Length: 175
Image (cartoon, rainbow, N blue to C red; front, top):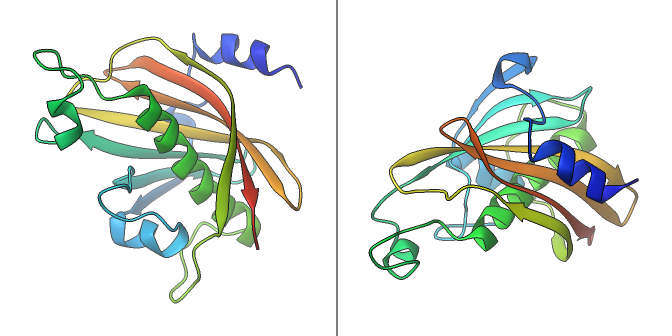
């Protein structure tokens, strides 16, 4: 798989449009906490809004509040949400996607154990537009490759209909 070609392709167009997604979702932070291990203040997804199991793609959202403490120092007088946290957003959304794929479902079950994972590598990332406070970030993640140990996804962060970042990352599934 040519990762550089994928990064180039998806820096210009969305992986999937919100209107193309076949399964609308309305899961909030409490639901997300059931399927991934992240917690406040490092849970970087507010909502899951759409799923396409067949295309192995998911859409989520995060509101970038101007009161987020990370913006106080990044950067004074021109607050910009950090690119490294945009990578983390897409990674977290990719983990949510893994839950739905592994369980072949669009529902979140009660009393389940969050995935046990470790990030292993950022294969590539391109930062195109600043992600500014008081804006909603739409996050998209798509499965590229999974085996019994590793998962690779491509993700985008979009705000005001502009692609802010596109990245490809890999995790190791520990369970």
